[in-house]
Amino acid sequence: MKSILLVATGGTIASVEEEGGLAPALGGEELARYVPELGSLCAYDVVQPMNIDSTNMRPADWMRMRDVIVDAYDDYDGFVVLHGTDTMAYTAAALSYLIQGSPKPIVLTGSQQPMASPFTDAKLNVYQSVLYALDDRSRDVSVVFGGAVIAGTRARKQRTMSFNAFASVNFPEIALVRNDRIVRAGPSAPSDGGRCKAGAEGGRGEGGEAGMGGRDGGLRVYDRLNERVFVLKLTPEMNPAVFDLLKRDHDAIILETFGIGGIPDYGDYQRALFDWVDSGRTLVVTTQVPEEGCDLGVYEVGRAYAEHRGILKGGDMTTEALVAKTMWALGQTNDADEIRTLFYRVVNHDRTAEA
Image (cartoon, rainbow, N blue to C red):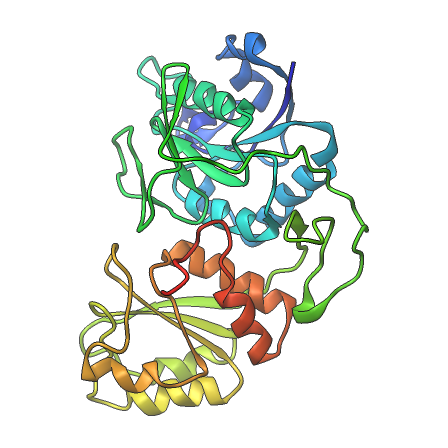
């Protein structure tokens, strides 16, 4: 019988009604007891690194989850993280970059209604997540929610109340879970049962990589993030002087432009953006439109930025993935060329190669 590690972190799934509103209170062991069917599927253990509302989830918490999974990696066949929905997409993306190429599945799930609610979606989400984690063809980081399996770098919460809360953005769903069946759109790479060989590749290689196992494109584990990343959404008449204000506390800006990549030519945007990059900081350009991605080269209002080598293009990536990937890339190196190489490396389906 396979074994799964349940990593409970709080969120709606663990919440109960208190005087101030819903708040996490149930522990991981209690949550598992609500789904007794798990015992017939697998052996499992539960760990509880935190019990918080996911609104309070921060990069330091991502690292705690990463540490729990890495430390237990050789002892389990898969991992299921119980997480609040509000920042689940950020955590799924972060784990995709911190634990890359995992031959063992790392699944995130949660619920829109608390586990203790009579109308909860939590039981089915947990059951289906474990079912997916036990499948021999499952691998890498994913979100399982409402019967859909989504790559960890492509998930986005689209609905605040409905049970189909998450969508896969600009990439097909990995699979669907229907009752006890996993329906896949195409073949998946089989798991090779890879082990997390701490120190096997020890040290830090080119681009500041901290590899652990997987010399030939297999499992790689990283232990550093740079949290000094800011998401800035363009709005009409926004003053580009904001870029100067952000310099003290941030090393990178992810700029959500208009449409397919429009940046106003009024004011002094071009000077502000070029000055940001020339000061040694990172600028990532994406779109605030949810689907289909960004292409700076289409319109005149974007083309000047498309031709600047120092500006990184988000392509069809989600903002959540861009935040995590930029933190990860800057955590490995300060060299602009190395950051660029890491940024454009495709990880867990996070971008189409040509985007």
